Length: 342
Image (cartoon, rainbow, N blue to C red; front, side, top):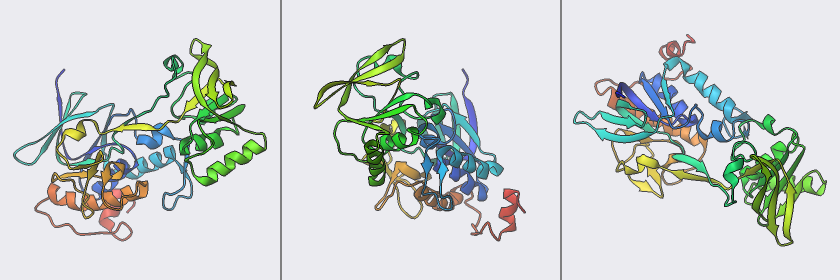
């Protein structure tokens, strides 16, 4: 198979919310972008892990789901015509003598980019699977590591395993539509938000939700269809009726090939400055959850701020002979024309 060569001003690695907002900020400054992502659609973790889960800390949006936020960011970036390349993992990077980067993917694409923006969240991620014998036979039909559509759990007997925010959030979100929900955790203490824990305990005291203490040791069912889970706790072995199992044991994050690019790393995160959000390698920026600096907060809104500053510096690399004039979208007819609203 021949390699496709694509030239662009900026290559964005990651199509999550911060990567999508990068298209907008770079587009305002006339920088053309291509976006590559290992997933099969835009939205990153927001769309992949909790598309219907509400998010409450996006400025100006009291509540928005991961999918709604993704859709809004895509619409905002639409005027700038970025091209997306899904199901591609970046495998190699090489800087040419003229400063242009050659970036290869596992899908036989080679990008020639003036700047690179790494917006890959925590890198490539995969759920941590519980050590339950034979669980693979139930995956995709009765065992799920994320909730893509809440409606698919309507009327089902759902067993949720875990003690963190994801486990508690989905316990509270699914119990109104499921036939029955049981929350199982290895101890009667939780790492989730106190308000979520209180709501869960109130439902348990009202008899609307079951809380069991223990760990799943076996699954029972035929042809990938779960009937029950066997758990072991302080009371001994218990059987929990369930035809859907949601284990929330967290995610394993891996930088993948990015770890071999010679960038300064801090605990598997990419160290950046707070003026330009540039890495130790000039022309390579890192924004969003994948970066680190003193005081870093892993919030989507923080990533938006980082992108805006990265764009200011990237412009000087893409257009070294042009002067950058700062403009506001509210008052600049030039920017409004780019957005199609003038």
